[in-house]
Amino acid sequence: MYFSQYRSHKKPFIKKRNGLKKNPGGLFGGVIRFLKLAAIIASLVPALYLMDKGYGFISKSHILHQADNFLKVRSVKIKGNRFVPAEELAPYLGRIEGRNIFRIDIRDIANGVKRHPWVKEVSIRRELPDTLWVDISERTPAVYVNNNGSLYLADEEGIILGDKTENALILPVVYGIDLPKGGTGNKSPVEGLSAAIEVKREISSLPWIDLSTTGIEVEERGQIVLHLKGYRIRLGRGGYLEKLKRFKEIAKNLEEKGIPYKEIDLRFDNQVIVRTVKVI
Image (cartoon, rainbow, N blue to C red; front, side):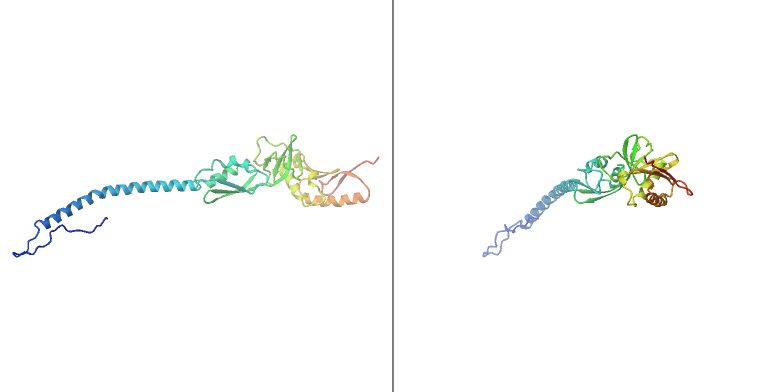
């Protein structure tokens, strides 16, 4: 409201001999001026209200627009990946850059990333204002699987990870298994693979076995034959660690006697079959 100093337009009292004389109509003129001012104020109130409403709408829209730009995803950071490059995971993340960080369904993105055969677990968190962190836990390769001349990696659970032959890993190679087509990312239904992975787990603790030159052959009914440098051990099914300890004692006895061997069969509890090498 605007205020100004009020100046009276009344004529001053003039002292005359015949008494005082007032300005006629003074009170009526003041009333008229008051009514005019009230009418002007009344006409301005709707206009001011509409202007305020319009300005408020523009102001809120502008603020929301600025906030949306401020919270757009501009960076996606991936950690925990050792075997899988970040570029390879990008298609599994979907289109998230440029979207509002709070409008992204984190659970949906995590489920998408888990479709990659190497990803076992994944967690995603927001880092305001514009960054998403993707923390993945990869599957651990256990063995190579020789499938018709091509090498595939499988993890401890028997999940086929794909033909990652560019990563030179110190792992044994499993033979005698035919993998189903399109099995990458799925658990192999072949029973013998689980047995081979169990053997790998046991021999990993034995310092006298070089995993890089070890082959694990799966025969009929899941019978395991361990191929080492220069000889092989028929382990059969189950009790692998005990059989390997038993083999170590037998091998020591044969070496002390100077008897070369090429195969030791430990499939039976009450007998050992040794195939020796003929010395010419």
